[in-house]
Image (cartoon, rainbow over all chains, first blue to last red; front, side, top):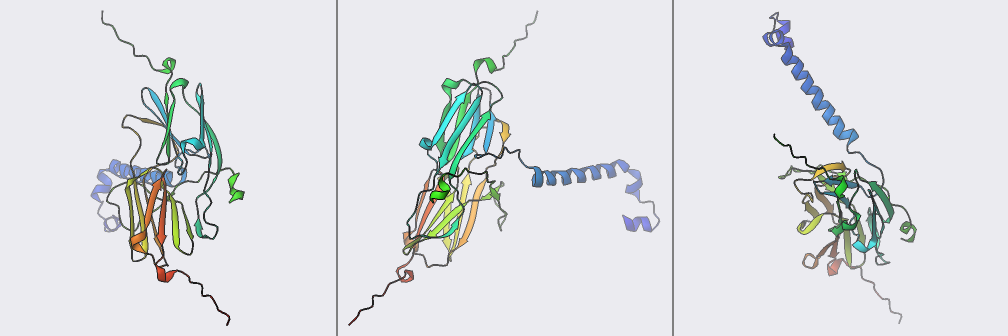
Length: 155
Length: 136
């Protein structure tokens, strides 16, 4: 483009479509900010172990957390109206005392976390299971919190 | 390990990696946290790989390079909508170079509650041998 401008030709694409230029710039900016967002801001984090993903569908909330090495017995889960609390202890079993460690990256310790859910849940029907080191708690939404479908009548 | 028992666990974000070769399946790749320890007889490797099923884990030992490759299926159903997302799921990938000579026929792997326990026995020749000195 510079070359064309230098040669004195009023470069065609430059003059004929300023909007296209703008569009290109906007796209470039989007790409940049997207890259920034991925690198710097990421997911919102409470900074409390364990990290949790909460999803919902029409009837339930699903709370998931990665807890490798934990069994259901090691966890203490309780629900009250709209809060779920999970606590427990991650243990790392003692190995052979003659063992020489090369790496020790896995951590042990206690944890406790409370999450409040957007609506009340049916505390009697909450289910939790631990499979392959992933805890899933299914919390059915309380009847009062479910959206009511309103039928539109035609007269 | 008694000193770590009572400590409160801190949040550790999963370490994302760029694998040397491009993935055939799109998605994120994480490094599993691992413990490695050695005794006279064997090297044991423990790796946290939550969400990986035994059938989705590939362990490969090739010319002293051990490769762990675990695929995680998203546990979420299609109609679930995100409320909060604090961690992401993807596959686990990690390579280790083993210096010791490993008896390949006796490698034993067990995946339980998302933790891989890999026993790599040393070959007879690589085991340290204590030589008793006789006094005459």
